Length: 434
Image 1 (cartoon, rainbow, N blue to C red):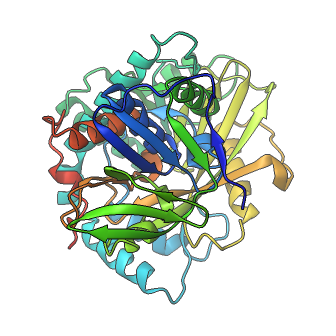
Image 2 (cartoon, helix red, strand yellow):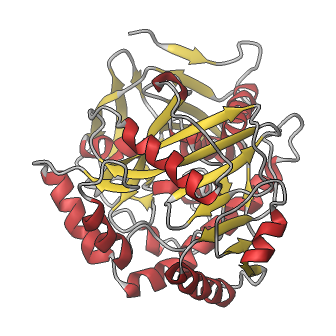
């Protein structure tokens, strides 16, 4: 297997006074951690099982969203998921199969899907999202670091009376959490925001606190920046073994190399359960596959990104001339072939909300899909593990990986450097299900 080091040979290593840190995982979480750890004086190496260009950090809808304070594990999603179980186009699906990891995760998910959990999860999700948004805005000051960031807000459009009631309660909760610039819009107010196209909705929430970006540009610019700072990005490095001694990880072993770090960061996304298992650490986590379609030079125009409530889909204008449609949560294995009917389900939902949008199902090669790391309660896992004194985990962000990326990287840096954390990390405890 080819081992490729993505590094500018003309850029000498910068920092390294604190020691060596190896980050396993080259998505937005791993690269964000690299960003802050390099700045704080660590010699940073990032290992990726692929080539840094094919993960969920690229194909998502680009939301940077304090509004997403409701976790994936809710009473409603369990009930609705059972109804959708046999619908090939449904937006939420759990593939039935004989898999103890799925059973274990599923039981914990159902137990977590309570009103009390939704209440207690809201504040930590808000806090880490606000931290992350602030950090992304700091990144904009880096010369040449353009990722088409815009703070226009985010719409959540509803089509039913029940959706309107949900929206009313969501706005009340947003105000309670301090997101006071959240508005409930009438049908007429919603349509006035999008005069160039018809919208089939009874109304919407407008989360003015939210922003969005073009994920592809964000990732490309982050990789370029890290290379210039001397961070080593090494592709095709799937970890197969850890060498342990004295309560710490001494060596990270791949099929073609051995790495000897002082600190280890596990940021392997939907593969994190398997990676953690190699060091005898249990993390309840399953891959949740999502899909997206991006129109280049789109003939359609929207001003605002939007979540389509009853359609369980999302739409984002990106980078001036693009529109991305995304959605679905398919709890499945990494080996299951993609289901194109789910992509058709996304496009059908868009058509129901935006009746002028006639978007045919693209050929398979034009459809993106990737695997989100879904924790058993909808909250990420961020923190040290008890068994080792030099291992930090940062994974389990479900659909919020990009939104929470910069904030997670900042928190990882604070953990590794034994600094006071920017927020209470107890809700994100890695071994909270042990």
